[in-house]
Length: 181
Image (tube, rainbow, N blue to C red; front, side):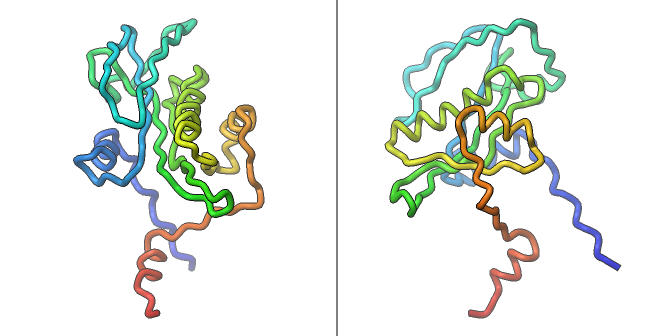
């Protein structure tokens, strides 16, 4: 009889993610771009991180957005909500002999999809890579996610069929970490 697969890990909450990624938490050396939305304009703030300035953009939508999880994703203001984020970090390409960015995760909440926010997030990462003289931006996409694949291809990304993702996790990670070499 085959062993049952372990249950998937629980979905992280906004609090867990921010605890892990903000400077007071784990501080993984990664960068995060967040799309925040509001019905009122954001104030322009002069001082941010030295290598990245916020992008302020007004997006006029044809119809109002119904956000059933608005309270869960409330940000720094009364009507400010997180619509999505991209999590990325520097890497290095020995093929190009240049640094680049690897996108670990990009996510736009369902009610904010198909409104240009994903393109805005990826464009911000690409702009930062170009500004820093980096050679590329890379990420993976699940083969069944045809909407994402189409989106990436339309923006000019190359889907590289010859590459496969390798991963050590859970028991396999622990076992390999303890090999006697």
